[in-house]
Length: 345
Picture 1 (cartoon, rainbow, N blue to C red):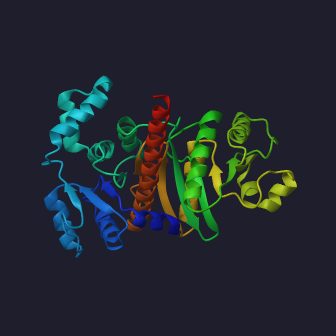
Picture 2: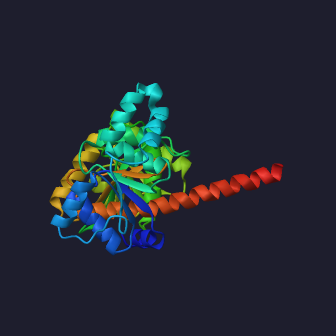
Picture 3: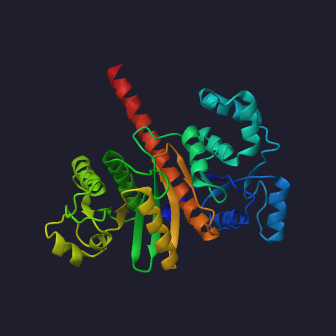
């Protein structure tokens, strides 16, 4: 996490928390302010947030340390419901329902803040279901221009190493093309943690040992990844033991292009990814970062209700660091576009 924290601290970003009344979020906000990692924005009822800060003995001060957005009384209400209505009017959202949603759906408010550049990044999901939060984020923030699919990446810093698991929350039964897309997205995220991605596409089959549709899917996805990004160290399909043990893998497939232990584990479906993630989380007292949402236009992430304050801090640091990288990328693309237009003028 050191590269992430250093990047976030070097360029402070505004991060909005949809569940600003949550005590875990408030403790995280205190640490983010104390350690100069981010500029928190808290969504919630002012009297509730201030009372909980006081009850917990925290030093947070409204306006000095954080911005407060009260859904019941905010000057941006008209602007926000009208923006939301424009985005959603062809999905059955009327002006009346848009007003009600902006009063009652904090995740929508947070996503609109990022959409309108009133915040640089957002965190939600400490309350509620992942799929409901994701529905709002995908509708408002949308896919990045160069992305074709969303995916969730879980980072697990365990006693035996750091591992990345994809995709435990979004794609129920991804196609080979989607698996390829999510693996390439995940590989870029691994690099942001200062590590080189070593990718294993997992199955219950080892390198063609079983003729099964799921194994064939992962085999095809491996070919697609190698074709689109030949420089990546990737192999599949294989069992988890072959992915995590070079000794086992070398006996099964001596000519594997993957060397050493895999750190990026791409699962064949949401069930296997979710089960693996929760099993490892329960068996090892490690650090979990995420889930991290990949493929979105902006830095927006959906956590789990079980997340701790430390988990929120880690995710927020990542979200802010990533927001900085995304900003640089947008500026670079804009500059290149202007240069091309000048050449053709």
